[in-house]
Amino acid sequence: MEGLLAFHRRFYITKRTAMSTCPAPCSRSWSITDDSLRRYVHFASENCIQELLSASDCNRVGNGNDGWKLLTFDNGVEISKRRSGSFDTFRSRWLLRSVSPQQFITVANAIDAAKQWDADLVEASYIKDLEDNLSIIRLRFGESSKPLFRNREFIVYQRRQTMDDGTMVVAVASLPKEIAAGLHPKQNKAIRGLLLQSGWVVEKLQDDSCIVTYVAQMDPAGWLPKFFVNRLNTKLVMITENLQKQAQACSIHVNA
Image 1 (cartoon, rainbow, N blue to C red):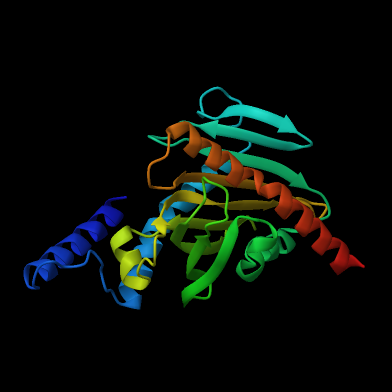
Image 2: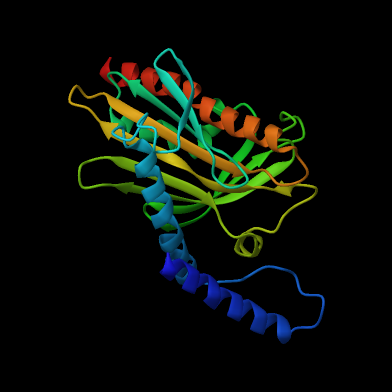
């Protein structure tokens, strides 16, 4: 955490110096090298990965001290939430039988096909790949999307990591708005929201099945009542039902 704060301070000093030497007004964006961006994302994603792993720890679920409140358990899918500052964090957990972690991650990471499991999504595209498992992505929702998504876009990093025990983690969160503006300036009337933290934890079981945990916490920005925002987060977690169907279809196709 101290390393991340130090990194933010260095960027702030660089930004402040740049603003003091350019004529007003200056656009609020940072132009940084790929190496600096890579180091920032590594710092930021470490905390996100640890939060995801903590949320997936089945030994903590329901012990009364982990902060998660069960909302519903239906057809093998658990939906829970936890108070986290201004916006609640939502979590779904479910068992995928006869679907390997690799098969699920292949579906969940298929950015080009993301519209198949999220009907509100208009565009999902790579801005740049920093490493084999580290990418910057743009997610855009259009004018015809549901009100809570309408005209919103998110500039996020995606980091994929396999832990020593074989657990696969995909951490996704927004870049700071100044860095995002430097990489991809906001267009038209789009509202740039913030994905505070999200991602997948996929744990392998002995029978080539897996347990999947998905976590989402979002600030969609713009003026929205808090209870609308929490409905938005719930919807994000429920996307997992579509992903489950695609992953199982993929498994049937592979095993056929």
